[in-house]
Image (cartoon, rainbow, N blue to C red):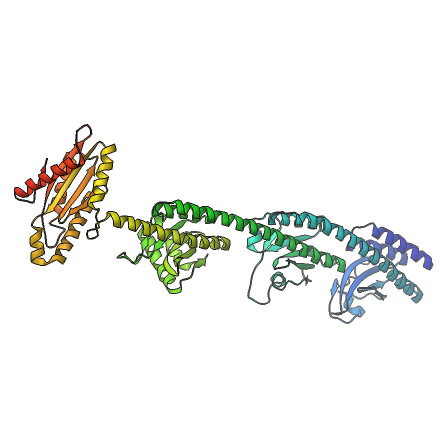
Length: 603
């Protein structure tokens, strides 16, 4: 047998080789065991790691010249006796050499040929092995610490200079790939941070079932964990990617169960994950600040545009376009609670096509009931009540001004979970600011309508009709004035009362408006007289319109009445004034009344 100094020289060579390696792995340990096996002239040599807390052993590496003897790769919670180390037949000559190291203890399992090793040799082997591993551990720890410190410093500078989450994630992956080329790893992130990334990212799975996945547990508790899976031969390291305010994900590192994973490496993983979490947090705060500035700018610009909008249709169209631009919505509707309307609500112009039809009105009515009951916004990506309409994501935002509920906006998309919460908050702010503009615009338009509308019949006033004719005579080519008078209206009032007479006036105005549509202007001329102006219409066509009105009046009034009509017209190039136009129509009406009423005359 060699002398003790030869064993020391052997270990010196082994230590020198080991320190040339970047990490301690089973291949390196096997190389060391092979040289020791040759020196000791043994048939088999193995190195186990002993965990005192669980009294369990894990095989790190082994070299063998005897295939018939195979030790167990992993021995857990068993007494440390020879019979437990072998799958089949136990060899005749076995030696156990416990080796105590600073952080953990290992155990040599040594068996040889019938030539026994002396106790002195075994003692020397134990002492020199402990010395060698102690030296390697100290030097390696310093090397690892320096390496990791350099990497952390370099990575921290890069990540902390990043301005968005994607850049931070790329820096994380780049750093991990430089250290763990032979290992697989993932960034387990929430959907918000990982959905658009092409990096090795997993989406965090939330589950209420027990036992909870370790990754979820680490995310929720913010505590580092290692999960050992003996059957798969792996151990998985989970480190929370946490900042000062919250946990943003989990770093998952998968390592072969036989690989040595020192404490410094665990500390590096924890520190790296924490550093990454702080960098993510910084970029999130930065992006949030930019988003808030952008949102404020958007809201300010929108409010400016809202104040500049002259009509309700322009206003709602502007709001709709902003909502669709922000959210990518499929449909947007504006529902207004109109106390002056004979309906439960009005769907404002500017709403998308869906809300102009029956389905949209039904949908609006369903959400009206919910809004009136809770008076709170609705935000969901899985609205089962919308399945029959073909939508899944919905935002319903009340329009409230001075504590009064004016109505609500409905924002829809066909896909599930389409709208983000940030978009929802922005739309809520937008609708809060829009509610005042919508209310003011509706009141302004109603006031304008009141000024130019006859209170009783709700058709235009004589003054508005005169202004319309005057404006048209300046730019138009031709126009026709129809002047109607209800026949024997005094007898209606005398027979049925003035309240029935008022009703007949309303019915007459309604028949005229339906008959004329968008072709002209209907106005109350005074008392029981009505006037209709038809711009850019040929006299013959105007006469047909007058005849249509005369025929429909008796059918649309109760009690049934008739009307007489006088018609006058003008053409560009004629010397005609508004006064002469009215005078001729009035003369024609007088002649129609004189000739028996319920007839039409033209002058």
